[in-house]
Length: 234
Length: 352
Image 1: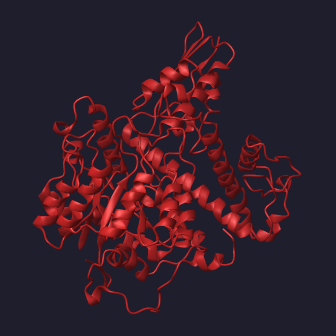
Image 2 (image 1 turned 120 degrees about the vertical axis):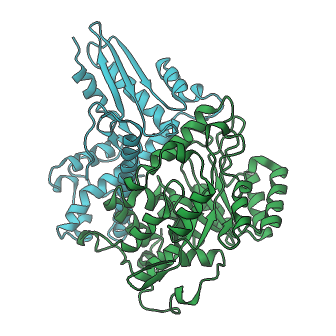
Image 3 (image 1 turned 135 degrees about the vertical axis):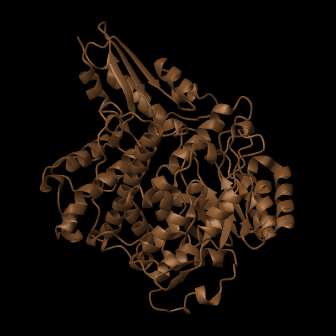
């Protein structure tokens, strides 16, 4: 028999593409149940009624895929609540229809490009999380330029950086440069490095500030704690 | 005017509203959107200090006496700039139209600057209205809300050919300031709704216009900063940045301010309360008291009294030719504490 815990773990792999955090820890999961005969029923919620429908779609569709892949789940029900496009999204995802078909006339292409753009941002933000402590500890940008991923002490932030690079099809092995540009994966030269690090920091701060506002809005909107919700990472 | 520790600050609130979102103004059949919109605004208010929260009932419709007290009597504002957002698809008489704002603009001379708006989907009629509004009220600025829904359309871009006609009309009519705000849905829905590339292009093509990006591009503050360093006529509107972060998330506020000061610079940032999402009083008081919370922020540009005077009012006064009493102005150019954007100097010679 499948347990809620396993479905929740699967939902933990689903990220808000804009914030690069799991929907569970963000508090976006209202409820998550599994019946004895293997029907997983997941309800999702977002910080506002008008959250961008494309990102909402990606989360609902990813949740559907993740939950459907849990052994023992025979049927998956994912329902996004209280959103202006709930009906289109829930219906479209359940029917395995594409985004373009579900938003007839309002969209031109599927969401792959949008997702990739935001994985690039997430990669830059992850670069900042890895590099800022190194710089604070006295390493110079010139020193960072010659480091490899494997030279950096193992940490969740390093693995996040590695994972985002791998998702983009960029070099992600221990022997690859720590700092690569998010488009082509080429090593960032010493000259371009200060600006690259500045930009990474800016991207990281933008993302974290957004996550902060989203959490604040969600708390204002709903009195209940989400399933798997975690305190903000400060 | 706000006075603290012997320093006097001239305050221009560059982003305020006078809205009616009460249920009797909801369009039949679009009630869920009208309700969703104002409830979303109300949730934003929750990010301010608890003592400043209003009930949803009070929040639905701003009343005149409350506005005048909150903004001018209690809120230290010298001049308030109305930024309309029509949303006539959801609200019968509009959410916050130029006409609605004009009631107070006409009744209290000298207190307000009345901005108008346009939408390229209105075609020739919209251009006529724009001319009429400029003639009637002397509007020098417009608020553009690219995410507004209209007859099945979910938004527009500044680079649409029709929009360029309006930007040309602005130049011709003496409108100098374009306040651009991105909301969450825009056509086509598969693209990033907050993408500011169109503002970037328009700012390059219309160097005579100032583009004030409202909310500093939140949630795309990173893209905004990067664009603003490259376009001399792009400004950061701080509404929402102060309101949503200064109280609720002081450390992120400090980081965002540090980044804005670095990339955009203190000469191109303007305060706005976004009244009545938030009242100006606590924002002005808090901003004057504000500094980076710790040493950890030491590599961001310093914040001086002059920085705050510029951001709270003097920068906007320049954009809108508002006369500032001599004792509230900064000493002449080159005065101590008057810094430019550190980032621009540091990056000179670097190809961005």
